Image (cartoon, rainbow over all chains, first blue to last red; front, side, top):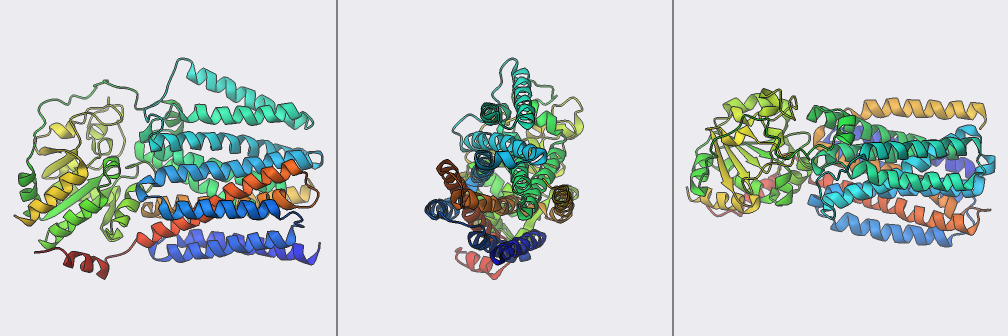
Length: 459
Length: 108
């Protein structure tokens, strides 16, 4: 090994250590940002190490790629609004997975004769995971952006079709594994994996996106780890595995927060069951005027805001913070209750509220805040539905039975900000809306909140 | 693959998985979005594989072109991912005087 190769390996070791440290520092908001600087340093070291130690002879493509990528990346980093964070993250899963798949194809073009059975196996996984994550993430991003409909797209024999495609893909994998000279089989595997990614994500509804995002996160990481096996590169294995496991842990947490299995999320087509009113909810929804709602809030002792995806679509995060500050000036205690699957990706609501300058000490997780609802005067539900549906707790026949909820119905009174009388994404009736302590305030969440703020000032 | 190298790789994988589980289960839900964005940026380390493909000795032109695309997408993830993660983490703050400054502007 030459001196430059040793240098390169040293930078990889440093990068691995810095990546692990940075994730450790992610355990607290005070240290998280410094941790990321360490990870950036590690990444920079590894890149410089590679450029010096990897016998680079052709610089044109490298410089062009780094330049184009940096420009697009920097442009995204500066311009993407916080409300579009789920789409942006889905796109980045696609980019990461595509890079892994392409490196795999390159390795096939150049080195296939030298790859032993283990590396061939890893290469197969890299290609399959990389390709299906690329198209799957693109579909997820398109759904989140509203380019294709958020409702599950289902048809007869869908699961059978998916199964057959999975079988074809696995068949290609084994054929290639035994006969690495089978170029056609290799590219068929790549193509089938691209198609499979599309088919896997189209039947999944938008409300299940937190799980899908986490899974795609996991696949993208594992594709990078497989690349590490193929190239015999430890820093790739480490970084890819960290990413893969992070995604896996998040998917498990998200599934728990919905009381559903991963299989059910992936193949259940949840959200298509329209009109299946197993709920015994009924009666009249009581509407409340802005002035009355403002009065209730202004004279309350404790108020809890419960944001959902509606807060993001209405971009109402600043409006809710302004209202909360006015209430706090009057001596009202204000907290925010965050359900783990509120929004479209893990932690979505926290980021939006942080953007609006809400201190994180005011954001409470479900387990912390649930005991406090009974001593709360007003719970304000902003564009959330299923995560506050008491049927999940009380009605064992409900489609979402057993899903842990924010128990807003225990509050003395509830104000629900909602666009209209329609049902939530899952198509379920929400008995909360019919309770006598609940009042509905219809309209766009952002304008309702800012009107409430004005009204509170005049109380 | 040389069996010793393979075994070493499996060790690295298993230890990284174990460590990843330990470290990441300590990240609070508050930071789950930045976490996802950060791990994404970190797995952009596949950039180093792409760099080799795009420019190393003895690779044919098609490999260089694939490498170029891979370098581009991986760089987007690294630059964009770290940039956005930092932008998000900057916003997370405890009760600060900035809040007081913001409320002062509200007329009584």
